[in-house]
Length: 329
Ligand code: ACO
Image (cartoon, rainbow, N blue to C red; front, side, top):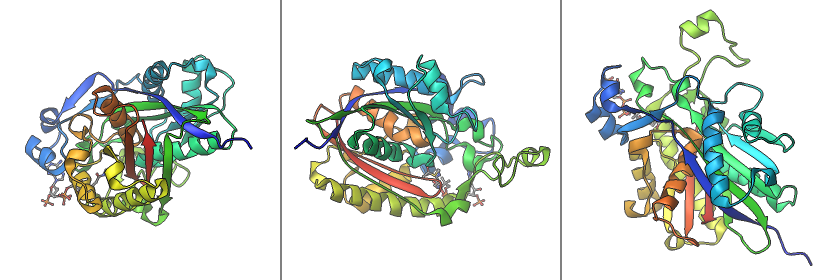
């Protein structure tokens, strides 16, 4: 009998725009302070893309790095997935723009919209395609330019977000089972707590919607906070259960970097010490679908993870959506 197909993680990469926006810079833009932002969120600075630098450009740079780490040619990629809520355009997909930038023209390519849980959803989708035998090598990217959907006059939200991209190459294997489990969930009844009201078919863009800044993110921060902690802890437990691993088997927990206080509350709820949790939010801000993958890439590059280590990625986002994945590096 044929062996079951598993998923091997071949390599990761990441890319951040050059421009750094510090809390001191924000103090000059809105009524806020480094003290308020640091103590409430853990964020010190974030990266901001240039006007003519698109999500697909960040995705391309991260992909080049991931392909290099994977030691595989772009020509061997047979499916491109991009998780994003800040696509270059509504359509064509950012995955199609990325495909062209990579010099490819026939592999299927599509975007995936699950807000900050996008990369975890992407691992689940890539895994399903690979394990079913449909595709062999999948390029999965989380790419965001949240700076372009932020209201820079609203201190409630503008201090939280940033730009960046991360990529992973996943491949079919009969020997390697690097994706031990994925768990994803959603509850659309929370859609009014974190959303962009206009620009879609519900409220097509008009002069009025733009003047009212309805094309920028709106958020009920306190409510998001509470549900995020509950659902991230729940997803972490479910994915662990599905992986047949125990808390002690996980070398590093990599939660979505939305807010330091959310991360600490999730760690407490799961019952792990912060020394086992990877944090880089202080220099990235919240970059939605790109947080877990860029954090994973940094943990690998800085030697916090070694080949064979088991990691749990945990995320939560607009929708609401949530998810976790237990993977071997
Ligand atoms: N600087 C200074 N003061 C501010 C700022 C700011 N940037 N933003 C808000 N305030 C003020 C408010 O106006 C309010 O003033 P008031 O008491 O005079 O009315 C006061 O600070 C307290 O505001 P709250 O919103 O109650 O502050 P809170 O302690 O809840 O912190 C925060 C706000 C950081 C947004 C928090 O609710 C949070 O982290 N929520 C989670 C949201 C999140 O992470 N969203 C990301 C997207 S979802 C995701 O990725 C999981």
